Image (cartoon, rainbow over all chains, first blue to last red; front, top):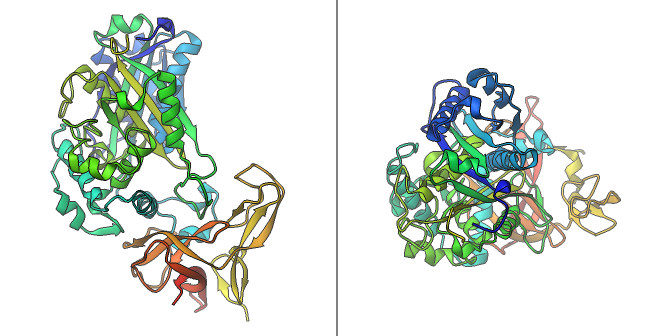
Amino acid sequence: MSGANIDNEVYIVGGGMTEFGRFDGEDQELAEQAMREALADCGITWNDVDFAVGGTNGETKPDNMVARMGLTGLPFITVKNGCATGGVALMTARNGLIAEGRDVAVVVGYDNHARGAFAASPARYGIGGWYGETGMMVTTSYFALKIKRYLHEQGIDERTLGYVSEKAFDYGSAHPLAWRRKPVSVEEALESDMINAPLTRFMFCSPDAGAVALVLARGKRAFELCENPIRLAAVELRGRRPGSFEVFSPWLSPGERTSPSIDAAKAAFDAAGITPDQVQVAQLQDTDSGAEIIHLGETGLCANGEQGAGYLNGDYKINGRLPVNTDGGCLANGEPVGASGLRQVHEVMRQLQGRALGQQVPNNPRIGFTHVYGAPGISACTVLVKEGANS
Amino acid sequence: MSIQLVDASLFASTDPVALQGSACESCGAQVFPAASSCPMCAGVDVSTVALPTEGTVWSWTTQNFAPKAPFRTDEFHPFSIGYVDLGSVIVEGWLLHKTEWVIGEPVRLALAKAWTNDDGTVVHTYGFEAVS
């Protein structure tokens, strides 16, 4: 590890995750299951936890999880930042541990969404009712408009979208907690029902149910709780600047494009003292197949435009240069919004510890990266390091 | 004669049709619809402006399924939406009369029927049509 004071380092020492998919029950049942699994994973009980952070996009109150887990008097912070909720929860917990000198935190994210695409209210986003009434308040058309432009600018073949889907459902089919476990071929993905051109039915993730919890520990305590703790080398959150292309935008500014993902990824790499080419396993927000392509470029994990050849070469598959979304990502797991970002971190933690639930990245990867991105233009990225990697 | 519009504040005029945006006195940025402050430079000195009515397709897609409420239509048919580069600002809107487009294709602003109210009044929105 770096020469920093270990008392200011935060590690992931345990994780728990429910199966993702349709769930016929209370979302907080899922959260409780994930939290109890995470505690058991590092051999502690709720009484050992000093601090907790929870996130959901639903109506329940995460801080009321204390009613299920135990009224120990611990501070429990609730966050709600859409698709970036998991990253924000993780950042809040890490900062709380360091700032307040606490030792052990639990982070939980959960949701249980109704079927179908999210229905968004224009008023909640400060847009007039006309935007929804004329059919433009639709997340899926935004994804299509964004990837259409990106593929055009970068000269990438639209068929690349089919390769993203094939990879996702291949890894989902190998993962015992994934929702979609049926492989889909490139041709099937490209030829299935068109939803918003160029994106077909097999190129979107759907809202579903699931929960993930992680146990974080600071300094030496981490090594008492876990044989191979994963250092949270960086977690950075950024918002949009002029020039970003966000969902529910009746207008865009001409000129240079920016992105909160570009900014958050760069900040995370800088804070960790690691460069994108050192990453050996990554999780990227893949709400649709196009998003994975865009986010590979925006995070710096590849050069913009390189993705077309990259997918053809299998660069982002389990045996490739940089395995991406090794649990099938959002495409195969669906997106319980509050849980999704923590699912990414859970998967990378297990990959770095050599105990992947699905396909394991070979050759002992030591450096991982995660990226969430969502409305109204925020992104959180983490750099995760298996100890000994950077010494 | 007045035309029923989805939101009159979107339009600087309807004959000829023009969209109304706002321009920042400090940085010059134009946005749509008109706003009371400038998101680009955080300035608060803005004034309304009629936006250019011709531009090129910046990106496009098709809406192949009927969106959930509050979407309104008399009868759903797949339609196109896109972003149109007007030079000073890129505006999102319907792309009219066809569902296959090319990025860079020239288009111009037009009024389009959105839905019919219970009393028979036709409500209009804006869209862009190919320049033939």
